[in-house]
Length: 384
Ligand SMILES: *Cc1c(COP(=O)(O)O)cnc(C)c1O
Image 1 (cartoon, rainbow, N blue to C red):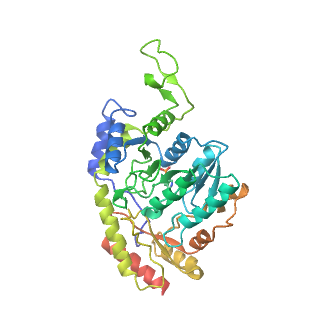
Image 2: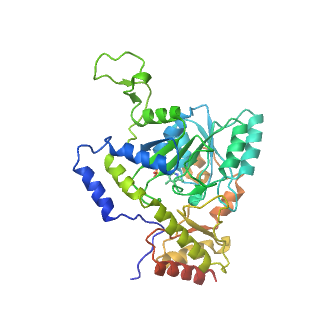
Image 3: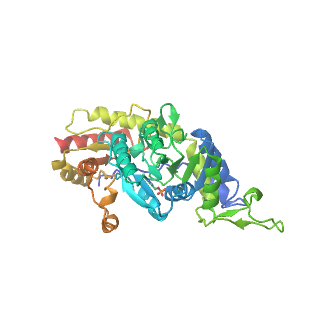
């Protein structure tokens, strides 16, 4: 039988295995010295002042919104074309979520749509506290533009960079937080680098970093400057907020440190695959992914658009050739849970069109040239 090609997969080396097994034989499995080391590596990599490691990007989004003061009285806006976690995080805070349509070329939150939606929201006093732009497929949103628009209305920004660690924006790394309050990364196995499960929040604000650390671990502090009362002994600690157990383990952090060493190589290879795909498929009746003018994408996904009338047929044909194409994502407001709350696709025409034509082709660092050709050949055959 011909082997199937998944849309994404992790790359774990012998070096990774060794790094993890060393931790298993050490004194600390969790909350030891390895998590802060991984945090330093990521902060330094993207030139952010602080990094806080957690057990998933979903947790990072949740505590980032809480740290920015999001409560049940607030609105949070995100992109309808994202994984549900981008939106669910706001619901965890009791806040209301709303969606800003995507740009039809970049598939990211559309600055023009944002500006007009904010304009109307301001009039009715329904401005969001935070927007969560998503760097879909690994290409950064136009953050300078989004920042300019959001700042005018006093709206804060959390970047969902789950796809985009290693990507550039205006010659900075995504995560530099030049145009946002917090940026969030995911280390799920399909993402650029992995810790099994895991995530990270980076920020340039020491105040936000402190809040994130507090919320990651039960709201407990051991730092005297944060305490309400006077310690009555060396055992003393205080719970000063309601936090969670969102900690990353040292086992995960060791894998992350080891993986991070290959991050730039991964980005190079993903860029090569994307270029090669675009070359091989340039004359087909499909829309190739937009190449950002703002900086290099991390190419977490390679998303093509096929005409809506052949979308299902092409998708099924590729799947039956054991090329496991996928669709990232079903628009969040179309999910039954969201529909039950009354959400519709009204005002989101670009997201609807996207859903009826988008398809993610396999892309990952160990995808062989032979397999790339097999994918391109199949797409060629099925779209003719
Ligand atoms: C994967 C992903 C998440 C959630 O990441 P986890 O680490 O699995 O919690 C959030 N947003 C986007 C856009 C994602 O792709």
